[in-house]
Image (tube, rainbow, N blue to C red):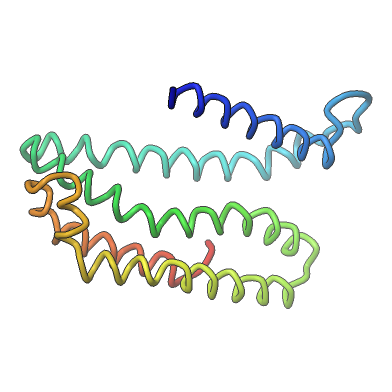
Length: 173
């Protein structure tokens, strides 16, 4: 069934990730001591940002549901999910950029960091702009894939898409 295939794919992905991680950081055997203070200085801000992003992601539909009708909240969430496609590009680019950019910043390689930022900004815009154009040009058609009632949220999709455009137009942050 499909569920068994999904579980198999997830298990295979986990195995590949563990092999890749083991190549960078040995998972078995003696390890070097960890500088907890520097690890916490780096990790706590990243953890805080992720918590804020996660809270914002989940609280917005709940707040909207408490202020508007359930159907209005539902169509907004559908628009938000569709607009998340272009934002996923920026998120993926940031996952790569953040550690590399942090490393260059800590090594005081400002010119390389500037060059890396420009490359990532160009790629995120180049990959995200076509999705933005589709979402703005055909919002009703895209949302009608969820049902005819969802096409009423085309304005929300356009507004969210413009926000996504501004997000990936500024490059990795």
